[in-house]
Length: 499
Ligand code: ADP
Image (tube, rainbow, N blue to C red; front, side, top):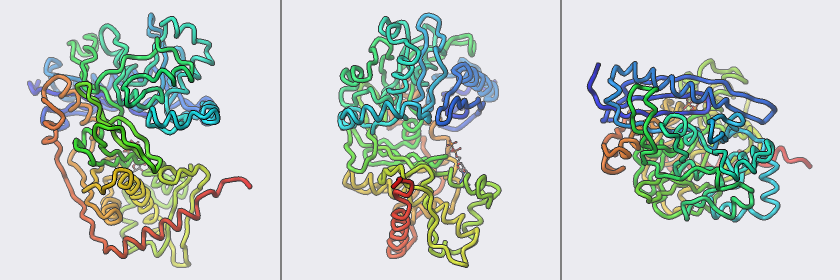
């Protein structure tokens, strides 16, 4: 058994629960991961079984600790990071959930959101919460539960607890069942006032949500309780909570205003540290929390690309022109360019800066010479073009261009994509040594929470770069490619609009 002191991240994701053990230098000592079932009760509806979330999270924690070969006494703190917006409601007395978790992807409350918007609440929601009204966020999901299960009176009497996954885990893993959520997760409910740093009375009233069922909002680095000793044999402090993208921004050490990270997973999530004032986007980006420490909020701008790595999955599973995602790199680099071909993967519409749910996938510019390699290359390039559009929107919202982009996520392993990203954005793209930045961020936040680190900045030294992709493309070529991309996007816009 090793006497190394460690910090542990619990990374509760949409398809699996993970636990990662880090030493105090930010090196990974062990990882354990367990998938759980996705439940689709109706088209467009997505749920998780709360018991499975809990079971897989506890068992991966126990396995990761065993694998690391450490004494549980040497765990200085645990940080929770989680799939965001997913909504749970449970009985304060028994802890039993009244329903499955309603997952962020679930569209069941789209009509509720339309009603809110028709009633003129859009601007107030944007101003107060930083979010664009959407079924994605927790507020209307909670309202749906209270309404459809006829639970509003019980909620008013304080008999029920609402929580996102961070809150649910803290309640279930800690002795004494604290009912808390951190500010980054609260900021994804569409009920949280970013400026006041509290639940918004007016929005609670509009959505008819009793305050009595809401968790207490705490700092992202706060000791919310101690782990039930049944789990690891000792009471370890649970010392941080943050939504996954916020933890990743922290794990990428984006501590100064203007620093940006992009995570290339199924979708891409780009967040920029916006400092201590709520940013206001003109380009349709979301305003959100970066984190909150010592009662001080740090804000962020957030944009997402719906089809990131998922475009590569589409090449593999639908078109079947590649066998594995990694081979897309060699295929793309087997040709010097796409020969003027652009793929706009607007399969589910386009987000910022276009915000057009009626756009659809489009492949343009093909000639008799176009083959598989050109299409694969165009697919990878589309991920970079969409991310470049997001960065441009952020740059015009904040009035300056970031110096570089820090990257992580599965598709950031693709060297061609990263080089093309640097070329098309015209700034260096930096890939860190630890690509598990979400887990690293949660562990480092816990380190701040227990006082291993005196401040966020103290953890910055633990972030280490692996590779920098320097922009090499001549300016004219870059402008031509971007021009071609935007012409292709125009072809995709509005395609599915009827009439
Ligand atoms: P998530 O957390 O959203 O499940 P990951 O960070 O695990 O995503 O990344 C998986 C995604 O990255 C998949 O969509 C896959 O197609 C893509 N991907 C993985 N490796 C590569 C690669 N070498 N090149 C391009 N795409 C890749």
